[in-house]
Image (cartoon, rainbow, N blue to C red; front, side, top):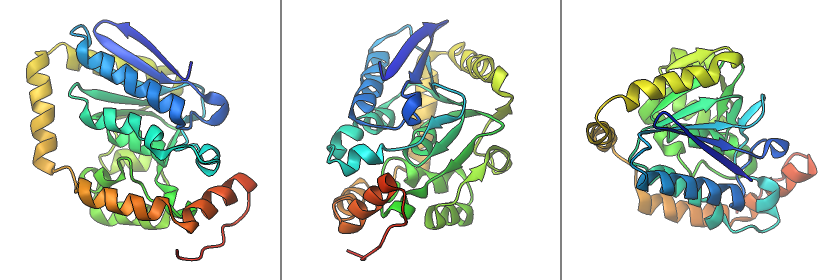
Length: 247
């Protein structure tokens, strides 16, 4: 199973379960995440949702570039992001390891973030001729624009401590205490009125805006179907530096 779920005390815990592939997002995992979130939306017992990754080193390494290079439909990989974007219930990321590219974008769709000390966060898509189409556009709303631009344009990651310093992360904890810390935070949220919590989330997100979906779609169509996008993914799979053509 690419996605595992369990409910404890009104909190749904979703675990991305491809540790052998760094919990990378392929069609099956994305569909599983989408199904879990859609089921949670219809379940009145679920008042908060914790998302974490299997293993001890990686929360999610992002889109499975090998699957993308092999021609997997990008729309399938987008199913999880669509469900995250539409989720009205509070989302809490329990970041058990590195959250990179699409993995960091999953984190950015979460309302609260608890992380282990060793995690690193980044959107290195530009290094592969792509861009952060999932939730990267939310980054400037979470940290200063200059830092968001630096991360987006260089593709370089930041540490958990730096993310906490910037106000992106709520808590940084030792690995052994991650689950308890995330569930404790989720418990504080789920103890409140469910409708009031959901309304508060919606109003706060509406206040900061949601980007331009039309522009995002246009750019994604151009960039993700480009020669550079294919070259970046193939170069990753072949473990070599990409040769950019700018088309």
